[in-house]
Length: 117
Image 1 (tube, rainbow, N blue to C red):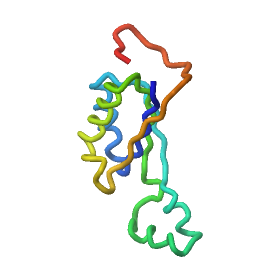
Image 2: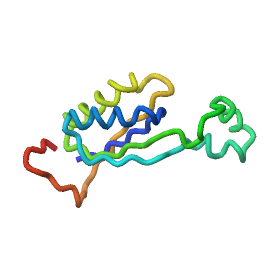
Image 3: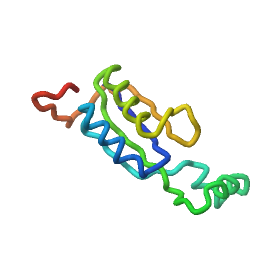
Image 4: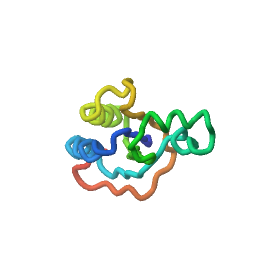
């Protein structure tokens, strides 16, 4: 099992990503608001204030982070395809970041009959 963490730069696209997850039978995700380090410290460090100027008019907590447990490589690839079908290639700037970390313990995820994960 792995924990997929996807930081999505455009919060308006998160619901569409979750819809894609549902279509791919990827369940149990959690979404939180998040902000990049440069945006947070822009008011405190003059060098980083330039980053804040680039996003004038945007809320500094403009990112959303999705956490979802995926069972295997196939489920991870489905999740990445679902994300990229909505926001485009993650290698392009200003789309987002996705990564996985291995899980050696997970309790509380209940599988129901028919779940592929």
